[in-house]
Length: 434
Image (cartoon, rainbow, N blue to C red):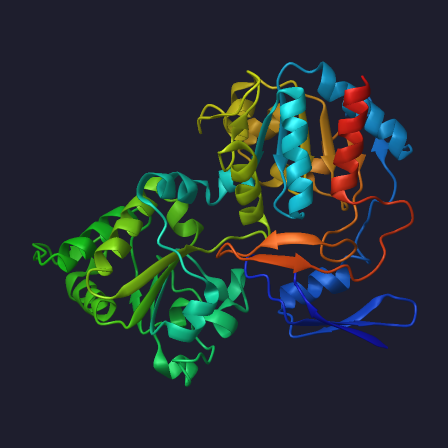
């Protein structure tokens, strides 16, 4: 048996970097240590899953796929993209940053629109921080300093299983040597989730009333008296208690998830939450951080901002980058029926987009760079199988706090299977030749 230590887990935005991978004599993964159940499944089960190892093509989506070589599939992909009038490039959240850079270069070359999965998760967080700033810190600071932690619209016990043990609640930090005993946990969630069951204070907010609750907390913080018994379903006494805990913290951190970004008011919830954190900094040190889902969804927003000046929803159709969410977002363009070709990479919009958008995806030529069968692959014209980043190829990913982390290559991909970045580079070369 061979052990590879300090491997980064390519599952969620926590990017745990202490995983131990156990390989047998043939180079197959037979076990892991330190990984959560989901991370373990990512490493252990990808070989046993239905895996594409050769490109597939079909002219009509009602036909069966036929196996082809990479050259044929890439040439047809390049032709479709080069001849299109409004091509879309979407995904990127489950691959590494060099592939992101290639995807953005391709979008500029074909005058298309490029975006990532933040559109349907933490896009509102991005709109908000552009309005009012981003009082962020690192997860290491939370581990070592935070004595008050808030999870708002997030259930890390299920979505980020090692977040609480490594960084936020149970971790023993430099100034928090006793771990959980040194911290107060506040959970804001309409449901009594497994995370809420651990809370010292559970603010059971009514669905879509997050904005009202944040506003009430800001009012109490500024010395105003609530004139009602409840706000957004939360008793006023509990709001006073939570605000007092936050005011008296030595170091506090507000983690928020899709329960906040995708509820009523969308990015205005985050605007208000950031203002709450700014208000709290008049009394103590407080920070805020989005609980990013896919392991490199943050990475695309970083790379796209470097390359274009905008984090996502970038439109190159006029020859220069434009950014106008709602107009240049992939979901809205599909629902308006404006695009004529789509390239999807490292995501599954067929399973997560609105039905109207998926119906239009099924009508236009769709290229999918995807290692496994998925809802999007089922409605594709071309499937280009890539090596799996963080397992079969290396690269860089950005943790939810914006810290870049190096992904290790653990084993070789199936014979002939190319990394995402090389597939995109070949498409770019073929289009330049055309």
